[in-house]
Amino acid sequence: MRPGALGVGAFRAILVFVVILVALTLAFYFLKKQNKFGFYKRILNRLNNLCLANTIIGLFIAFFVYEQLPFLSMRIWLLLWLLGVLVWLGFIVNSMLKIPKLKKNQAKEENYQKYIP
Image (tube, rainbow, N blue to C red):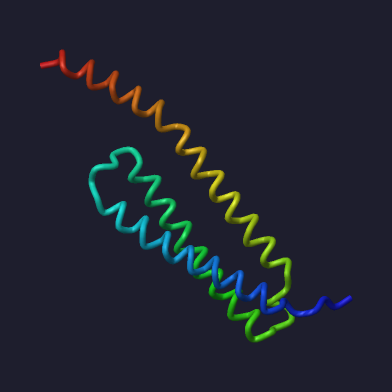
């Protein structure tokens, strides 16, 4: 009835994932500071928020696994964390798929506005 604690390998995997998330957070932060991305700046902001929030969650999970707290280091939290990341990425991909339509609408609007005094 009681599963064992996560092993050293799982702890190291969580830490590697957290380090990758920290690197991605810094990369997206510096990329969104540049003004050359236009429509994609919002996407970069959302990806930065995703990485930052999941870095914090990953650190909490790594801490609970390290301290071997029975309830808070259960394997189900890793599954829920992964599911949350996938759902969040799904929303980001959904907004990325809307960008061509937004570009098309902006081009139409600019074309219309150039004839208006």
